[in-house]
Length: 131
Image: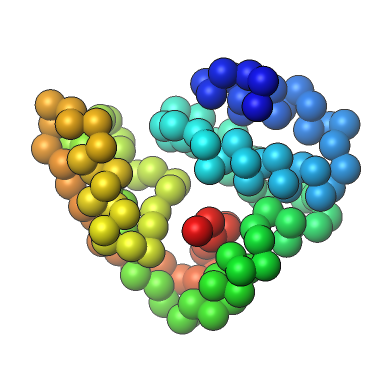
């Protein structure tokens, strides 16, 4: 966290090879939750989340794992975005809460039109759940 927000994912790539598995997942969780505009490096984030590193359960708290485990097979998801941002709808961060999606869509008061997308996904497609 000593790195400024835009540089934390870069720092993670530098230090990840030296982390124990639990440290990898714990640190990934911390920087993901605090990151802004993850779509700018979507492939990198997907590589992080799909890394073949043991103890992936450490990515989420026990409460978060419990929520994910108890979701139905088909999950309704929402994404708040600004239609001025190119490919914003195709982001990798979605929420189970329409209210939270509305917050994300309107938080910057951008010039574009705030939008809320609603979709369905298979629970098996969800990489992680963060409360």
